[in-house]
Image 1 (cartoon, helix red, strand yellow):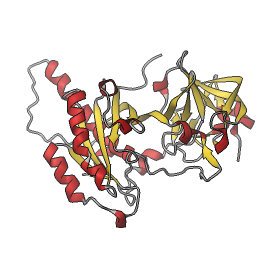
Image 2 (image 1 turned 180 degrees about the vertical axis):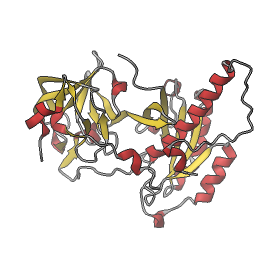
Image 3 (image 1 turned 135 degrees about the vertical axis):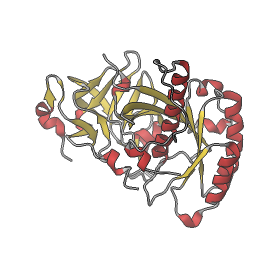
Length: 208
Length: 132
């Protein structure tokens, strides 16, 4: 069967326990006597399809939930990963402090050119905030990576942030392709034009 | 709850799904039109909601109609559960409702239960993201 997509990106969601949980839109109510089948066994990975500049991109997203209890994630987990979303909970100081440990773990185990992004997740109310947005931004600058905070108001959720990460991977990939296959015919593109081209719906969704 | 498996025949066109296959609860798109083939057989699929005492032996129901997906990358949006025996259960990627079907690890084939999805012609979830 013909491929129904142009690119396939393997992405990881990494952070302390609980922070990667998306603010779910709907969930069957759980109580003392009832639970849901899926919450009992847990989710391994998700497949999502996005459209970037007319290219169909499949994202295969792994959540580390459950594994981070061991404080380290093995090399096997990082194998083939093209993007990593580092997530902390803005209402949990410890989860923010641990980001540095996660980055060290990534540097030791993941491929050197893996695209990283820092995300402050806000599932709870603003009053409970322990980590200011400025501190998040500062840490991102320190590591030279992008930063966003999820926002209930703008309905930005953890997985929406993956779109930004996917765009960066795609850009990087195309640059590499261009470098290894320079366009023929003597016409060479000069890097004078800014990278951003408002061609897709995503570029209008400025997250930063 | 309306059960689309009652009038499933109108959803099949040339053996495939005529319309979008979406989550019943949050409308997340699971399969695009004509990306899965119809098949009818009996399978005991665990119920979405379980009594806490049933964790080891979940309560199931017989499901009879499925959309068959040969390559998991055909899915538009979907979640795969952790492995149980030789199976991974399928969930909605957005609201995580499930099982909406199952994935058979040895054959690498996925099955989405018609009784646990809804169908429509329109995609709107992508547009919503842009109203920031």
